[in-house]
Amino acid sequence: MSESADQIQQNIDRRRDDIAEKLDQIEDQVEERVQQVSGTVNQDMLRSELDRAKGEVKAEVARAGMGAAAIGGGGVVGLVAVVFLVQALMELLARRLPRWQAAGLVGLALSGTAIALGLSGKHQLQPDNLAPRQTITSLRQTAARAKAQLTSRR
Image: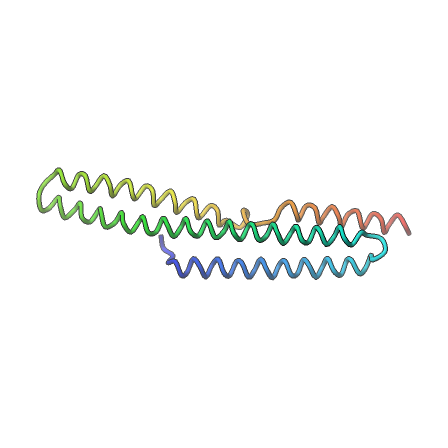
């Protein structure tokens, strides 16, 4: 784990701010479109799509927080694993066998757990896993319907 908990939290906060900024941009674009086609598109439908986008983004941010917690948990378990492995080495040098074997096995098990938690958290924080796909698709369909309505009335 090369990132500290503070760095991970900063990354999460930065991504949360980026998502909020993108959401505000989407909201501004939707508001502009609503004003452009005020009589032709159901404004309530667009607003509900925007509300759904906000809810989806909030859910993704919460999932990112869970991913960060898994990475943090992996770091803590990894630290404990290092302590056990160092203790195993000390026991090996001091006594020669049974105690260090037990400590070594525990350390290896904790190392495996740390790796699994870290990889799980990293996967959950991938940018592809944070995009509100359903809302983007729905907004595109709504924009296409609005465009079709405008062209059919001309």
